[in-house]
Length: 212
Image (cartoon, rainbow, N blue to C red; front, side, top):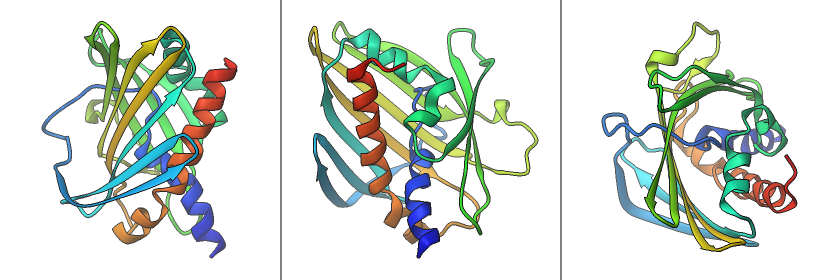
């Protein structure tokens, strides 16, 4: 039971890339909207949807009192991911394969008997409208390094940040991931609610306090 609880805390980083990223429709996991549940915790709404892979996708939305640049600054501050993202034991920036993008590598600390997970992500950022900033991310095999850890090969996330006024943002976040290796989908899905709400709450606190 202790391992399961620990796992629920560290698991979220599997479905969470704080920095954003490069979108590839070939690696984007297909979604089936057959089952959806919603959990409310404070300001944060989490919706879980079934995917064809068996692993739940997450849609998370919340408001945060901040200007856009402050929010972006926290998202791209790779060195400090461990201060607000559960399970991130290591993070570093990498050289992206596209000069217009950014990239990073994170290591996710998993409890025994699960192997640690490595994530190699390339990111791109753009404006969908004057007041809507978007970042999209996916695993990029060209960034993979030799490692004893399990590499997450199927990963997609998107941040959509809508500016409501000078000090209020609405955040829509989506994540789809197959953690690979020996983690059954039922265990992953069981753990994939507590972690997201806790992580997003830490993000809100960090952004609103400008603690970075």
